[in-house]
Every structure is written in C-alpha cells, then in structure tokens.
Length: 313
Image (cartoon, rainbow, N blue to C red):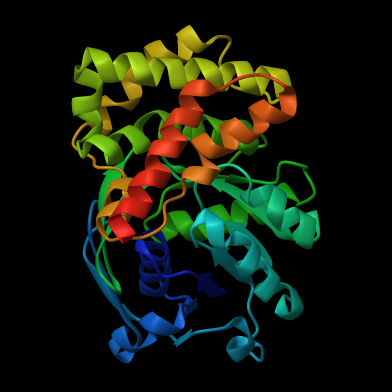
C-alpha cells in the first residue's frame, strides 16, 4: 500500500515508522520549520510497539510535492487546530486516496466531511499514547486498547475498512473495525477531557489525579457536564449514566495509564498550542448551542488558555 502520513508528530511518527517497517511505501508531510531535522528521511520509534528505525520514501512540506505519487491512504495526524488547513491542502490532490483521521477530540470528522465526500473519510479512535523524544523519534508510552476505525455514516464498504485494519495490525498497531466508531470516539473525548487539562495544569500523572479527592471532584464534574451536553445534543454514548462511566473510569481506564503524563502537559512545557478547543472547549461550544451550562469545562478551558499565553510570553 502507498501511504501518506500528514503530520509527523508523536502519533504520525509511530504510524509512519511501523507501516514503513512492514514493507509499505510511506511518505510524510511535515511543516517547513521541521523538514531539515529529518536526516535521510529517517524515523525511529521505541517503547511498547518495539524498536524500529526506518527510512521513509519521501518527506515533503506540502501535498502538492507528492501530487504525482499514487497514494492509496492518507493518514491525517495533525493537531485538531490544524485539521481544516490540512484537509484543505489535501482536497485538490486527493485523487483515489482514502483519508483516515488519526486525531484527538471532537470536530475533526465534522470539518473533514464538510470539505470532502464522506465516502473518502474514515474516523479512528486511538488510545495508545506516544511522546516525541525529538523530531523523527517517538516513544510509545501507553497502550489502552486497539485502534478502532470506521465510517460513522456507513458510506465505506466494511471489506475496505477491514483491509486497512489488517494493514495496521500486521504493522504492529492492533486495529479493529466498528460501525460505532463515533460513539467509541466520544468515550475517549470524555477520558481526555477529564484527565488532560488537569494533568497539564497541575503537572502530574493520571494516577496522581485519581488519587486526589479534590481533582476527582473536578473530574467527576467535567464528566457529568459532558453527559448532560451530549444528551441535550442527541449524541449517543456507550454509557447509560455518568455514574456508570465514572465507576469504569477509575476502575478500568485510569490504572493502565496511571504513570502517563498528558500530551497537553508536554505541549504547554514546549510553548505549543494545545488541543483544548477540541476537548473541553468543544463541550462548552456544544453546551451553548444547546442552551445549557458547562461551567466546569469552561473554567478548565480558560485556565489552559491562560497557561498557554503565560508560557508563550
């Protein structure tokens, strides 16, 4: 398979390195400011998916540079705030390729399908974590569950989706297909919204947050507000109640990732913009659309945005 990975950050590096090591032709897109750091198009990963060092077939700064290549699959792994720019760049050169969104948060699918035909767009839920050690070198630090891919509007034949899932699994990234990928993605949005911003603000691991009664109180409030908002917006979740999810959250979800620091923590430390607008910020927007309050999510969003600004000053 010929694969283009748009965004060679922590997750994009993992996808590109694993797929290239498995024998596929793999190309990457990165920002102009990073291109010189990729020596000989080399990528490396270590951690839970093993140690791999590979040489991509090409790394470019725009899709236009790859327009003469026959690409079967484009994996979009940019931060959520760059989704619209990435999809807009892809659109004129898409040809016959499928586009798989390998991103965090709410709104990426909505943006992609507003610009591309739904028959081309695949949504994924990714719950393994990776940390960028340096440009082109990523460490897989946590693995919560297999990657789930699917087409929320059922516009892509399941056989095609299973072919892609097998390509990923054979490359060392366990992947399955689900018709309920959108609902499953919301499970992760809840998880990330509860843990990521607080871990970034307090500069601590997920486990420490779950041990502290004060942070548990805040996380529970975040989760309950998300359940209120999704109910008001008609968004289906896998859980009957916030209490059911909260119990599962502390018993099953947090323990395997207890030593994990959120990506938002590393973004702020490095003076980068965070994905808060695709997590708690998205909850706030949806709440306003529904005419209800999400005050705890709004407070957390404002604190993260203030922290971003203070770090960049």
